[in-house]
Length: 435
Image (tube, rainbow, N blue to C red; front, side, top):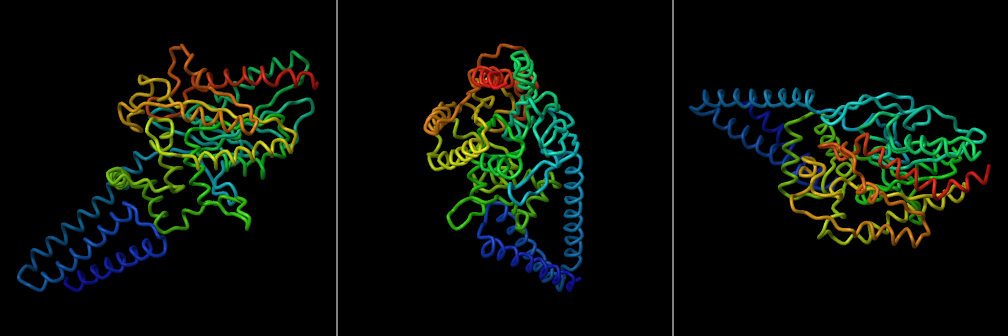
């Protein structure tokens, strides 16, 4: 038994040394999760070493019992953790594939069932990797195309394919365009979960510009600010600093692979790490965290007392400006939209979800809206602000889910109707005259 304990101590020691070296020297990062893992491995080294020492004394029987209890506890915890993970951890995103240029993309020609306490629906991705029905690369004759870009709000997380605001806009504008003799209308949904403007730009440049849209609509989400910063941190640039791609690389990291696997499979350990990070106020800016772990950081810029984000706003509008210029180069008009999260509509909405993401008593500010207006005006960008439309809503159906921050069917409808009116007022006359 003593030899077995010494082997276990050596194995734990090797794992501890390798893990610390990997994190401190190779990765150059040692967050709370890494410290927790190191502490567990270090404790195992001490426990097994102490047992090996005691096994050679009169406490041999006690050591045997302690070893049996330790192994039993560890095996029980792992089995329980895996079983709870299998039962309780549900996919929070549709099937995605790593992309060497734009980090991740939807899987073309796929169906996915998305389940959460707030919703259960089927999502279809078409032949071009866009949500909804199939279409052709070549624009049909006599058809105006509107291309929606954005993240999960645009993609329509939580609702069926025919309930996204892209469909609402199409249904509102199609008869109006036909009535004036302007032809048919097709609205394409290019939204992808957890996208930010830099990824939308790369998506447009490489994959979607060939669809010849007449209007490109970038729907700016509050999470875009911090996600843009994380993606840019991981971007590949040419010698001049031009961003060429944002490859998905976090799984190349040993530490990140462990965290990713843990997040997807181990319920108890994942919950423990969340509380450790929260207790230590860990806010490391990584793609994995800001993409997979929604939290207060995603919309902190809408709350009073936030930090200075001048550099982040500069970067995000650099990407938005790139989209605007690319739209002009393919003879498409460009529109930027913004919309609210539920906490901006008052303190009675999005309960109990709001208190998972923010503290009671925190108040919103209009700094974000003013900043977006100023940057848009400086670049000459058309801007639709949906906040007044949402505030004017007087219907009985909730606009947001109880826990998840996304829109319900009613929320998608409000966004679609408001955006449809704006597009009709701003662009329809030109489209009708160009028949």
